[in-house]
Amino acid sequence: MNKEQFAGICLQLAGKIKQTWGEWTGDSLQEALGRHEQVSGKAQQDNGIACEQADRQLKDFHDQHRNWYF
Image (cartoon, rainbow, N blue to C red; front, side):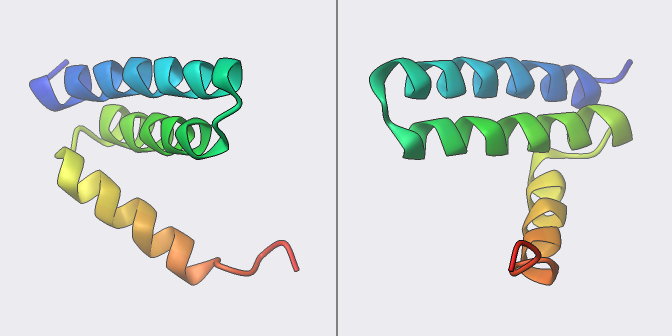
């Protein structure tokens, strides 16, 4: 396990805390940000990449699949 993978685990934990706090307070934006951090942390953990690169990959994915639910 390298430091990027460990940072990914920590980011997932922080995201879960934010998501839970958003659920408790009814703040849907905080809840969504927590979910985003969890996904970014999972990508960082699995691939051992830097946080900025994981965020860029996630943003690219969102941009490509923006209207998948319509």
